[in-house]
Amino acid sequence: GEDVEQSLFLSVREGDSSVINCTYTDSSSTYLYWYKQEPGAGLQLLTYIFSNMDMKQDQRLTVLLNKKDKHLSLRIADTQTGDSAIYFCAERSNTGKLIFGQGTTLQVKP
Amino acid sequence: DAGITQSPRYKITETGRQVTLMCHQTWSHSYMFWYRQDLGHGLRLIYYSAAADITDKGEVPDGYVVSRSKTENFPLTLESATRSQTSVYFCATSGNEQFFGPGTRLTVL
Image (cartoon, rainbow over all chains, first blue to last red; front, side):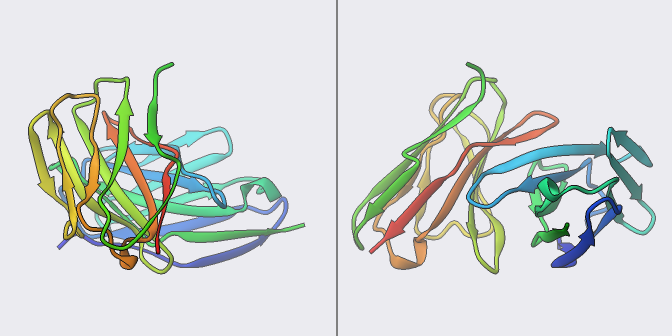
């Protein structure tokens, strides 16, 4: 069935790069998404990538997609304390549903 | 303003009562979704709708009812609330991007 896996926790120092990884199982996924959730807030769409792309860059964010391995990553360059949050990976199947990972808590130490 | 709104933002109710959570979007997106978010479970899909009058079950539909008579509205009803339905509920809509509403924090006593 459809499943999305993420590591639960990542700690980095301010100014370093963060890389959050995600694996998914549905090979028919059309889009893959990254969301950010700050405490007590809703989910903010950060970026998404279409399944026929390998990479997408948007300012400090770089998304890499390895479709063969069903692996997605989000790199945040020059990580700031304001980047501390939970990051969710999600895949969109051809039925339109999104399947979410459990979320990765990113801790940025000053 | 364009967007997705949810109401109420906070709700406290008692076991056995009926509760309806509202979701409204202004984009005319075909797809709408209801999720619940609980510690340790991430986001779980309750119901979704591909268009007006078309709804389908998600991962955790038991105890919930939805309807979609108009494209812009997708209410979620808890017919007889239970403590296990205490959660944060998010509505979402989808074109290529899926946008989330601000959430409704529901407490069932």
